[in-house]
Image (tube, rainbow, N blue to C red; front, side, top):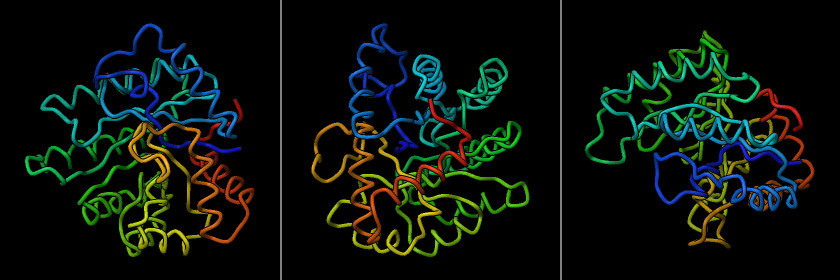
Length: 271
């Protein structure tokens, strides 16, 4: 069985970001979750990007027994009032069944857009790491054009046994080695199948399965055969088969090891 370690089910059923789920969200999502089950994807981690979307993630985790949530504010979504998000996340963690919230994320650094506030991103990243450590949770890291700084920050917490995933891994081989040395897993999905990503394929061909988890980032980043269409959790199966071919191992081995990695990190069992 397979696990999608990074999905945005809440975004799949909405046309706008940072609004609450529609009342019929359950009806809208049931066929998507059934499609995933048909393709052997039996567990899904739904990842927060803001306070509102994290709240949506928690609601989904409470509604569907095979869905779990993470809480976090994406670096591009940190507002001047981001500290209030941290207070809200702490309150949610204290008042919600801890078995349904399994991580803090997606958090990190993103220097892609020219108007980013570097200090705010640093402060928000560190504060959310410390929240994760407070509640003994792993983190899900978003990094874009900021690889060296991300490594520098997580290096500071090495003695705290910080663990997590480098989401949508797109850095170089040196970054991969350093992240793995720090105890992090590399998350990979549809981009592995894109023709231009030969360097990425080389990295994952050399990376042992013990350090890899599978993700879709649905509805974003679909595999090559679906480019231009919304991604879904069912496509984890496509990624698993592609990775198996790349590494010259069986699909079953990829499924078993990546699933074990996710279960060990997030402490989730069968739904």
